[in-house]
Length: 328
Ligand code: TXA
Ligand code: MG
Image (tube, rainbow, N blue to C red; front, side, top):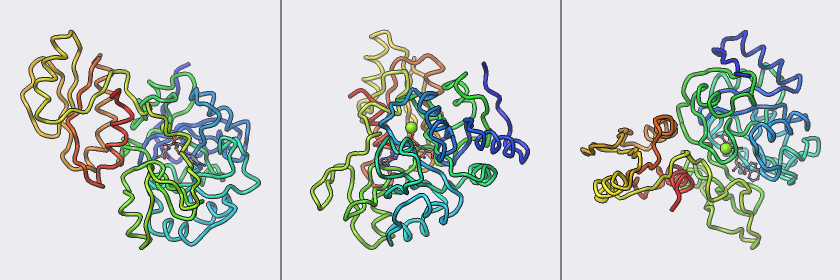
């Protein structure tokens, strides 16, 4: 069955809220990427999310709320760092890992004892949480390991019959998934970089924040279960290439018979390849990245070459996604 894509009017949001309250699934826009939502307090509904995505049960979901109070109720503890980060960055592209409150089904957390919480900045996402009257567990609305959707059409193309209702709130403006920061150890630690960088978090806290290479001071590594090496990937083979090497790499790929797509931040003449120009600034680049990769997949590219991006904190999330989308 093809899903219904509804413009996110008040009526459509009300209908979607009822679907969620009745245990159904709804895809909806957030400022980062589109999510596939279910009632976070209903273990059966949560199980349907895992099934729709083909996602392994050990990989926990992010729970979306509309107020800080709701978040506090879902966490078994709300330390000062959580209060500070929520006050500074919510609503926004930041997910906080905290101990999970006992009444939240363990299925949400992949069976673990923590929970990821986020207040999204998209008005439709917030209105949907309010309409449902429930916290919404929502991973990105794509099949496991595939590229995340930044439009309603991407969701329909990627999930097809697995989702019945898609709320269309326009293209996502942040464009890559939220920063995930673990607050359950002695030092906050970024598990998944995003557009709110580790450096920005540290500045807001006035204290150090660990990265995904770090372990806690207590010596216990806490890997984010979702950070499998190949992830966020288009169908094409993707490689990041230094600007000086692009002309030669494109020629070699064309000579080898590939359909070549290239993502560039500044123009280069590249005959024979499909070239997409992306903005030079990190915010603009992130906003356009997944859409460009979806387009190149749709155009039949078999090899995508991406011009290397700066080695600066503002690009951390983007470099992470390019690394995981790639094969090298
Ligand atoms: O921007 C986003 O975060 C989007 C939108 C829809 O909000 N959601 C999203 O969800 O990206 P998902 O499920 O595709 O990615 C969630 C990530 C995974 O890497 C998962 O392993 C990690 O967050 N995560 C979730 N709960 C966790 C937990 N309790 N402990 C550690 N990592 C967790
Ligand atoms: Mg995802």
